[in-house]
Length: 314
Ligand code: UDP
Ligand code: MG
Image (cartoon, rainbow, N blue to C red; front, side, top):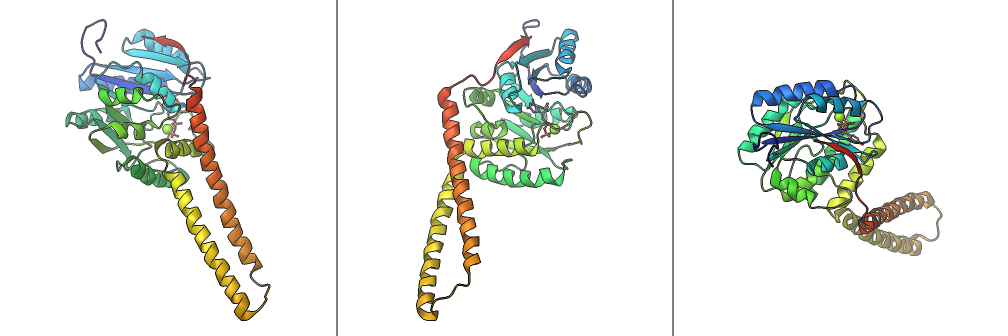
């Protein structure tokens, strides 16, 4: 955990995943280093290039040349934001580890706020995007996911999606020892943390580049999150199945008695169709969920490396 040149303990490591962020990197690094220099504790930053296809790596390599506090990891292709952060965790030396997006949506100027809060004795401090500058289409699903995740993980947070977060080194070490192929870092951290705090941080619209998350990628991430942390979804589906079967039974009984009392009739065929659709939908969902778990087990059993690093620079 010591800086090889100065033999000093490093206080802070910042981990930043980078995927096609050529427009943001220079401003990001300038603002980050200005902020941290003002804060006055020793620091380093680990940029993880998640298989960028633009000039991001060249820019990072230049930053590394001029600034000894910059350390680099490069993936051979795109493995996703959370894998990139894991790779960064493998190399951190600081006592406190902060994760930050490269897109400047969360201002680097907010990092000291997290550090101050850590100083009060918390081992995880999350940022909470109080005024989130994303479309409603992005915010509403997030609200649902935050509620669900809070229940599943057992730690009530307003914003699990915000990646501006600080972790005690011990929590990072615990996360590193989890060799799961996919993991949602803020949720994983909370399963190891003793006390967690959440403080409001700024959020700006993306100015350079574009969001790397389309709707599909977002749905997949959230599926991962739900099935990765509990068997609750599958239990919920089973419960629904039981309830629906009971309702169906009662409905059949009702139809039978009605047949005896009123006599034969053909009305209501379409009601039956409607009900059938509900059943079929839930069945397919159940099968899909099962598939998700089986797929996860398959991935873990194969035990392939989670990512391949093509280059590192210290
Ligand atoms: N990112 C990454 N790999 C990916 C997607 C994103 O390393 O496959 C990085 C990206 O460069 C950024 C952060 O993760 O630093 C968040 O991505 P983005 O801003 O696109 O997500 P959003 O803010 O839309 O949730
Ligand atoms: Mg963003």
